[in-house]
Image 1: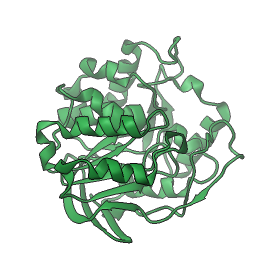
Image 2: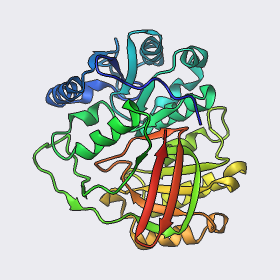
Image 3: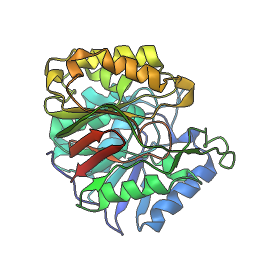
Length: 326
């Protein structure tokens, strides 16, 4: 079990930073909803100095992003750090981060997608549990956010174990373009690709982003892990297959205990049949439980998952248990 940062409490200051894309791309109304949601939980919301700075890549300089990251961890009033949004380039920061500074000031850090590289690197270099979960921008979602909010609260505000159960419905609408034009689909049970029981340390996030860390000092060990992976609409069955295979070639991948796969967006066209084919082709994981269509990734709603936390997994026909041990 990693070092669990202090839980968030009403009255806490939470800092918004933009270590990947700039917050400048967010609509003003979306930011307003997000701030009100967090304030309704009792949090005091503040912003990094450079959250709105941006260049031709809709990001900003390494120096400015590092300054906001370090300041958020150094500021003793700040108890939680939310990433504004994902993107493509957070791995630019890794060799410039003062991990000793972060280790000496453990705090809740939450985000997903491109933030996977930052989240895994901090856990690897400091042992501090980080959280794969909603961005600050996610809190600006007008409809269909209840499941995401409930899981976030369970993960970062109390010590009790919690389960990642199927939501009643799901959507992959580009809600940030039109908050009212939403289509929700009935959520069925999770898809059991391989049965079994296991427990281990949660390691993962966005698969193609995690793979950027292979062979570097920032990649956590997969020994004894429950690997959780997802990808966005830019992925499809062939890229997902080879990206997963790449992970399974890592020396300590032979000791992965279970695999959780987040639900794919429709544009990925990754069908149940394709997933079954991909997983069944990998003999090295034939003995472990594998569950797909789990509520995390680039569809909504999503669960909050602690990187470095412990999970208990049980997968059988029509019955799944994904329990997070705090």
